[in-house]
Amino acid sequence: MKIFIIVGSIFPFDRLIKIVDNWAQDKNDMTIIAQIGKTNYIPQNMKYYDKLGAKEFNECFSGSDLIISHAGMGVILKSLVEQKPVIVFPRKCELNEVTTNHQIATAKALDKLNFVNIAMDEVDLLCYLENPGSIISKHKIGEFASPPLINTLKEFIENN
Image (cartoon, rainbow, N blue to C red; front, side):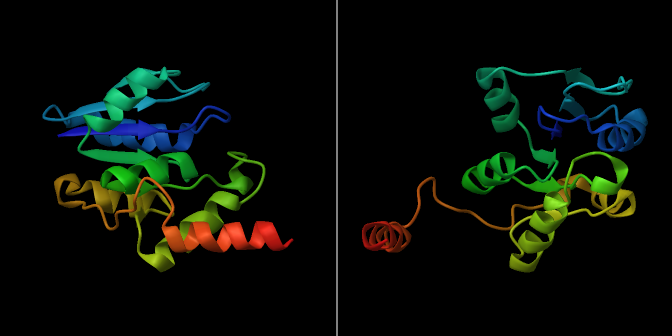
């Protein structure tokens, strides 16, 4: 199994990387790759990159069986379009991982829709990782907006 961890490029997300790195210690049957950004924590049990170019990122993403990510909409949307199993682990403002709790709000909204797998804390994440091969993609979206949505937006723009 191949797991790709994505933390984005603006803020470090040491908490997520540490949790998965500790979990990965004896997982010799898995390939775990992480895009870790600027961080003070250096993983010991996974291959990692500070930053990946678009081509390398897409190769890692497409070649993975499971995505673990912060609650960044780019990764979430890509997972839904490509129907990749994803665990969303939101950053928390109170832990200085982000400046607002917008990722918590995003995760809660997506959880209500049952679009992705949400892990709100370490316990949730480790529960998912007990059997990572059983995690499924919950929803698929098209690459482009639906015609009714486009028409609604067009009408709104034309009338305002």
